[in-house]
Image (cartoon, rainbow, N blue to C red; front, top):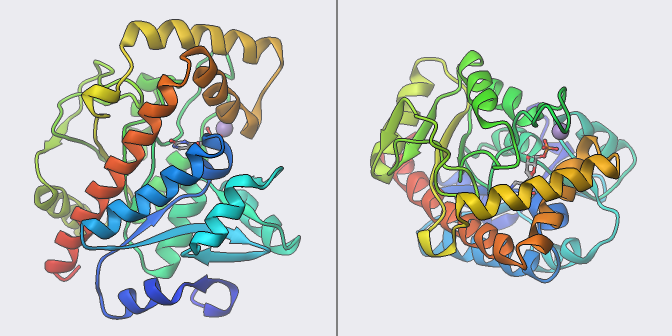
Length: 306
Ligand code: PSU
Ligand code: MN
């Protein structure tokens, strides 16, 4: 894991890490599989800009022709955003991408692992994976949850994707010892929807408090932590609109026998059609807002010398 020859770190991110300046990891599955062209490219570029505006260096992570890469350049982001048939790599698929010299987009689990390997402690995404609903895929539980249990990275997100079984997802995270902390909220945000109604045990109201929380969790030997920020009110879907749209998207997934890694991208794409793009606008807004918050927390962490 400490062999530096099996992955590449972009010059800017590498220099920042060496100088202990704040760096924020960003994932690439949302570029290749979560959002359609050209919203995917615009969102990835806007997320990087939000990190910079808040005083940190962004590092978008993917496997590029078999090389795990910490910090894609804008040309690579552009290519990835338009590439057909990109592998969706969770933690278990990284070896395959390396051996086959493939280009792969990394999910939350794979991105967390690569970020940590490169020395990055803060990561922003849209929504983490979790336990899918019984009616759709009873045994499909995202590798994101187990990665959070073992890899010490703070994941800033808009909660877990509202296409999931959220009560079950929260229970699993508790079992795994992963704190889920609300940012300015007492309940779990649900991705496109601001509130799931599920109570969270912990809340912070500033980036500084979030940094202190994560530092304390790390001192106690904890690994990953979730910082969950609700999507902005003006971009959010109402719970009613979302429920109806999800019901239809799930029925389409069952009818088409979609399962495995294809399930989440399928549901997100159908929701975008059914909501006539409103879910896309929500997704874009929440990714950029999470990137900004992650950078603010990374700045605080670098101040306290973590
Ligand atoms: N957030 C988004 N869009 C996405 C994802 C997150 O706004 O597409 C991706 C993440 O990479 C996450 C993955 O790890 O969806 C979860 O997929 P699965 O349910 O197959 O584990
Ligand atoms: Mn899955």
